[in-house]
Structure formats: C-alpha cells, structure tokens
Amino acid sequence: MTDTYTRFIRSAPGSLLAKQTGLPRPSRLPRRGDRPEVLGPVVVLGDSPGADQLARLLLAEGHDVRRRFEELRSVGSVIAVLDEVASPADLGPILLPLSSAMRSLAPGSRVVTISRPATGADPAQDAARGGVEGFLRSLAHEMRGGGTANGIQVADGVGLDAPAVVGALRFLLSARSAFVAGQLVTVTTADGSATEDRSAPFAGRTVLVTGAARGIGEAIARTFAADGAQLVLLDVPGAGTELARLANELRATPVQLDVTAEGAGQRLVDFLRERSLTLDAIVLNAGITRDKMFANMTPGHWDPVLAVNITSQITLTEALIEAGDVLGAAPRVVSLASTSGVAGNKGQTNYAASKAGVITFVGALAEQLAPLGGTANAVAPGFIETEMTERMPPLNREVARRVNSLQQGGLPVDVAEAIGFLASDEAGGLRGQTLRVCGQNIVGR
Ligand code: NAD
Image 1 (cartoon, rainbow, N blue to C red):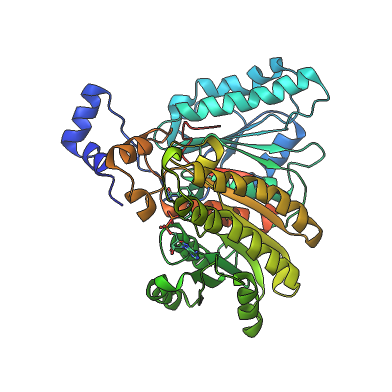
Image 2 (cartoon, rainbow, N blue to C red; image 1 turned 90 degrees about the horizontal axis):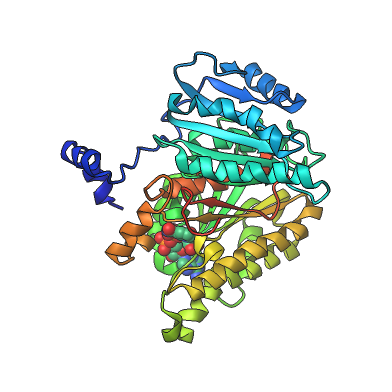
C-alpha cells in the first residue's frame, strides 16, 4: 500500500520541509538481505559469565566482537547483559557506557538487553530487573535511523546459551526484526534446538497457513517458502483463484475451506490424512474486521469477527490435536493477535474481544501442547500496510502510521519474519507469549 507522506518526505523538497518544520522523517528500515545478519561491530556490555559466554559465541561465528566502545566511530549492535544485577545501583555501570556511544550507532543498529524477570523473591533484585524493562522501553523510543532496542528476559535457571535465548538474540539483532521495537521476549525453558541449516531453517517441515491468499498470510507463505518449508495454504473458496496462483508459484498444497464452516476442523484433518501430510507448524492467520462503535454494534458485525478470529482457532487446533496423527513432533502454533487486543481500540470492541481472546488462548494452548513437546505463541501486529488497513478512513490511517517509534507502518513480511522466529526449532523455550510487531506503537505496553 502507498505511504504517500513517507514518499514525499524522502524527496528533496519533502526532506527540506521536514528539516524546517520538524515533521517526522521515517527512516528506511533494512530488511532481510539488505545487510549482514548481524551488523558489526558488536559491543557486549556486562562482565557476568553469561556476557562472556555470549561474546565467545558471537566471536566463534566470526563477528567483530568488542567488550568496550573504545574509540569506535560506528557501532552496529550492542548487547547489554544484565543477568546478574542485584540492585538498581548495578544498572548504571553496565548501561551508562552506551550513553556516549548513542551518536555512533549505525543506521538500522540494534540494542538488545538480556536480563532476568522479577520473581518476587528479592525486592532489590526485582527493582533492578524491573528497571531494565523501563530503560529498554524508553531507549527504544530514542533510537534513530531505523535502529531498534528490544530485550530478552531469561527465566532463572535457564542458561544464556539456551537455544531460545540464542535464537531470540539472532532474531532481534537481524534485519528480520525490522518492525519489532521496545519489546521483551521471555524465555521460560531451555527447550528447543539449534537450527541446523540457517539458510533453509524449515527444510523438511510442513507448515499450514490460514488466510494465505493475500496480505499478511501471503507474506507468511512466501517467507516460509524462502526458508525451505513445504506449505499447506488455506483460504475461503471465494479467494480460490488467488490461492491457487500462490500455491502454484510456491509449489504448495492449496485448501479451499472456510474456517468457520461446520466441521471445518475434521475436514482439514481428512484432507491432511488423504495426502499423508503432518504439520510441524500451524499459523492461524485468517482474520476479519467489522468495525462499529459499540452503540451501533449488531450480531452481524459481532458474530463473524468472533467466529473467524478466535472460535475457528479453538476448533481447528482441537481437531488437529485430537486427531493424533496429523501433527509432527514438537508442533509449533503461532496465532495472529493484534495491538487492538492488547490495548483496545475505539470502534473495535468485537475485534479487540477476539484478539484479546487469542492472547489468552495461546497461553492455555501452550500448556496443552507442552506434553507433546509443542509450543503456542502469538504475534500482535500494529499498523501493517495491507488491504485490511487500506480500508481505514484516510486520516485515521495516516495517524496510525505515525504513532510508533519508527513513524511508519510495518510490512506484511515483518509479521511473517516474527512468526518464522516463533515457529523455529530454536524458539522451543518460548511459551504462551505474544510478541508485538508494531514499531513500539504507543498503545498499550
Ligand atoms: P486481509 O484481509 O488482507 O487477509 C485476510 C485473509 O484471511 C484473506 O485472504 C481472507 O480471505 C482470509 N479469511 C477471512 N476469513 C476467512 C475464513 N472464514 N476462512 C478462511 N480464510 C479466511 O488481512 P491481513 O491484514 O492480511 O490480516 C491477517 C491477520 O493479521 C488477521 O488475523 C488480522 O486480524 C491480523 N492483523 C492485521 C493487522 C494489519 O494492520 N493489517 C494488524 C493486526 C492484526
């Protein structure tokens, strides 16, 4: 979709006007392929054994790793390791060296904090751990040039070399996390395994994507296909032509099915059995909006939104789990929530009810999948440039694009990349979480 303002502001007259008036100037966000996976030099701050461990890991992979800023003119990535802070007084010595290096951060740079979540066991320690969160969320608002700051919280007892910590770090340092800003990813267990082939992380895996014919679903399909997955792409019969075209291009298996149809779950199970397909990952993306102020809400606006956005997710996953023979080992479920489900949104009581339901649903589903070695998580996109947001009134759309730290809408591929991370082998230690892909939209946390 066209962001006319950003196109204008990047032109010579637009740039001049922005300089004179202080209008927002969204930076071009680097994405996969635009720059190295990890932008160097990488400065690892902190002197805990965990900091040493991560520095060694990155060094072994051939990155230019430093432990101080010294005289560096340009810094690509900063990892602040705060896993052993015992009181708020411990934060300054680790974090303050970054202050004078802020102006040396390269365009598209990355800052990642690594800390532990508060536990309620030790007031001073919890204050320090909570402090990391406040620091991180504020710093993310101050990043420039398309750079981002995010954090990883690692549960006590889980080592910093756990697969999900390393996987989250790789994701947050890379350009794949272009539109993730000011977020904390919590690693709760040491589960998961290292990705064997990082150039094709889903080779040999089968992934189902619902609502795949267009928009974010199409980007999810393309991203998984680029990463080597075999795909089962599902959409309503009305989108059959677009679905067939995409499936053909990606050598995927198309399924024309309305996820709200009576017996949709069983029909999907039968479809998979007939083709001897087992699913390693399920992306529950199909979703609709029927926005209305609550004073004007009718069952015609309410019921379909709840039916597509949440009830179908419950019935499909129930059918797939109950079938017993259509899921691979360690299945990953990733569901589409929304920032409206986190913070609420005027005119979207129906949509927010469904998406807030998704956020709590993945928590419970994660418990159910844990004995199978599986996980369930969600992504909550903010404003993403798709046909869904193209239908918004122009003024609302323009405001929605600017009210985040990156001052622009995200692209469908940004959501797809976050889903790829949550579905990866490495992410086994992430359970029941909702990762926002919203450029640190000001709504909610
Ligand atoms: P979209 O309208 O462009 O695409 C949605 C797809 O889902 C379509 O292909 C549609 O045919 C399919 N679909 C709808 N009902 C279905 C049904 N009953 N059965 C099977 N397929 C069905 O929407 P999008 O912007 O790509 O959104 C994808 C997901 O991301 C949705 O869950 C949406 O709520 C969520 N989301 C989008 C944004 C955004 O800014 N675009 C923000 C937050 C969350």
